[in-house]
Length: 452
Image (tube, rainbow, N blue to C red; front, side, top):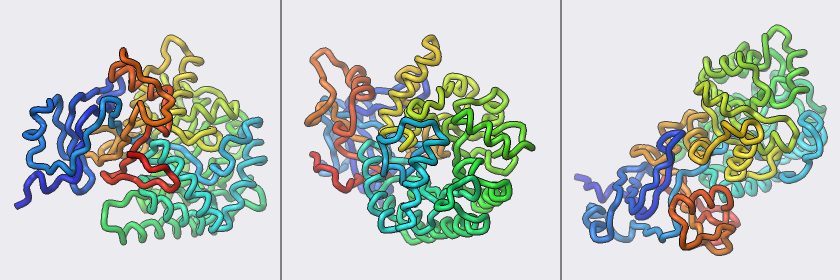
């Protein structure tokens, strides 16, 4: 008969920090967090003094115990609900143009290079590694239209150990000749990609971390026929869906000229079977009330990408209104519209955006941390799997050291756990991330310096 101790792979002892609601962060001091052999949180014990530790371990051997120092704490891994893997090639460049011109000038030429799968693998290795290093344990990735390069992205993510939705992008109209598909090839390759991922998942010995996601780039780049067929694929395979929505006023006007039979931009997706409780819509900057109501009615989620919305001069999304309507909202980096794959930076930009929009109702720390973790999990439909440290969820986490070597954070004698954590959120970066865990296993990030 198995004992409790024999089912445990690792135990953390020290400060644990997570969201228990959008209004409350729980700070667990002298906590014990037990992880089982399947990477799930088996048990949490709070307020365990040093002299109570041996008994509280319930026979778990000391070699499985990780003792945290006073400046270390463990938090849930971040969830990036919107990021473009190929665009990491020009991350930090090209913020001089608005969306549609930016796509033509920078994005489409860069993405065309992914017809070369060897180039794709080299770039994707860097893109995923940088995302992980920044503490993103789960991500909604956009790839490109190229089937073989999409497969390379899946393999890179599998190798590096991130949890991810991966989308083969669909584009069969209003796209350059060097980056366009036919309706038939787009649907065929999307189905082939889905089957590829399912086949890869069938051969691994643990719960799969990679899920295919239906990914029409945006309504402008897809005909009505293609959108309808993608909606049918999503239903057939019961897959998540992602796209862009109401990011830019010119984009909205162009979209409505293409789909005059739909009452608004959000309805375009609904009319084609692409708006449901598995849908992730990025941006949603210029949403009418009836569009937000439709998103709520369908149970879809929104990825708030404040950094990108500032950089491309798109506008400011009203997250407070979304939350008041009880719409699911998470954060997205939107590389390379966003200049960094850091959810910490997305959190900070979200704070600035909310203040700029309305100082009286701006987002506070508890809400921002929730959006970066639990909120993102809800948007991805993974709230029962990840997002915080509830028993039974999988252990996706960051071991943070606020006083790590070369830390951008300075901790003083007067600082508390709460003030140190807030400093990390607003000043810290990947230098404070000593270890990253996904599904209970430490992620080994290519090119990352070894940290003890």
